[in-house]
Structure formats: structure tokens, C-alpha cells
Image 1 (cartoon, rainbow, N blue to C red):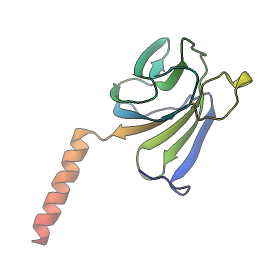
Image 2: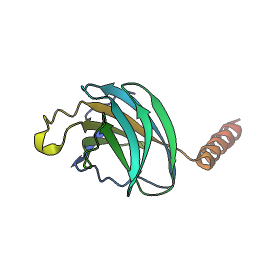
Image 3: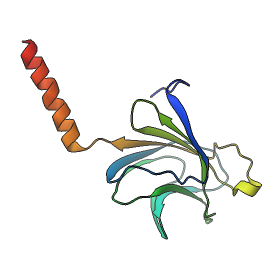
Length: 142
């Protein structure tokens, strides 16, 4: 998917304490990785961390039942305070997360170390209702 400046709204820079919709399913995909560290992407809530992806390529889906935040762990390190540039697409539930892999105090602030695309997957009932609506519209036109 191509993004233009008009499609994206700057959402947050710094501590990545962004509230994500729950309960919901999300798909995450590595777009780019540039770091000396082996990156790990996961989600966390309180003291719990669940790794979703390891390395410079991959994608995963997960179900979020409780509030969480996306987190990266560069190599064997866990800085405890991830910071990222996060952009949200204006018209759909899709985000781009540009992570920095060093603590803010010593960071080079390039935000290209791990780039993730996160998409909220529509609920099955929503898809069924939309499909039924389109079917009825097409039948009505005939």
C-alpha cells in the first residue's frame, strides 16, 4: 500500500504508550530493519511480553484481549522505554511504527531501526454484514 502525506497523521513520538483498540485482531508486518541488533517485536502489558517477530523479515497475527503496547527488544536488551514515530492512516485501521533501537538519552533518533506496519483486522461479523449489504445492493439493482 502506498502512503502519501495526506493519508498519514502524525500520532505520537516518545514513549509509545499508545492505546490500541481491544478486543481486536491485529496483523503486524516488518517493512524494513536497519540495525546492528537482532530485533524482536512483540506486545506487552504490565510485566508480560509476548514476542511476535524475530529478525528483519516476517509477519504475524495476534488477538489482543487487554490493553497493550507494541515493544521492540534489540538483541538481548530491553530498554523498558521504547520510542517510536507512529503514523495512522486517515481512512483505515492501519499504522506505521518507526522504532528507534537505543534509549532516548543516547539515541541517534533516526527511527529507521525497525519499521512495522500494523493493521487492525475487521471482525468476521463486520465482514459478513458488509458482504450481505453488497449482495443485497447488487440484487436490488437487478
